[in-house]
Length: 110
Image (tube, rainbow, N blue to C red):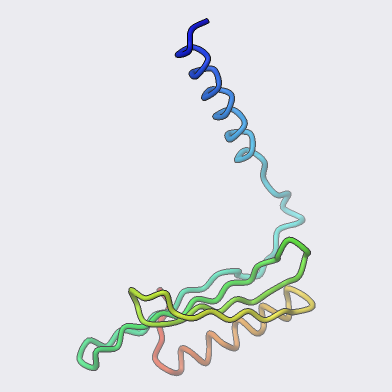
C-alpha cells in the first residue's frame, strides 16, 4: 500500500466518523418547545441607524441554562451579556419580554 492509498484510507475513515456524528439526532421527547434563537434588526438609513439584537437560549457543558444577548451596530462585533436561569421556561419568558421591549424600540424580526 502506497502513501496515497494510506492517506485516502485515513480520509475515508475520518469522513465515516464525521458522518456518524451528524447522523445522531436528539429524540423528540428531549427537544424543547421554546424558541431558542431570535434575531432582530433596526435599520433607518436616513438616521444612519443599522443595529442588530440577537437572543439565544442555550445550555452550557454543566447543564446551566443561559439567555445570551448579543447586540450592536451591524458589521461590528458588538457586545454580549449572558444571564443564568433555573429552567428553560423562565429563560423563554425572559427572551419574549426582551424581544417585546426591543420591538417597541423599533426593532423588527429578521
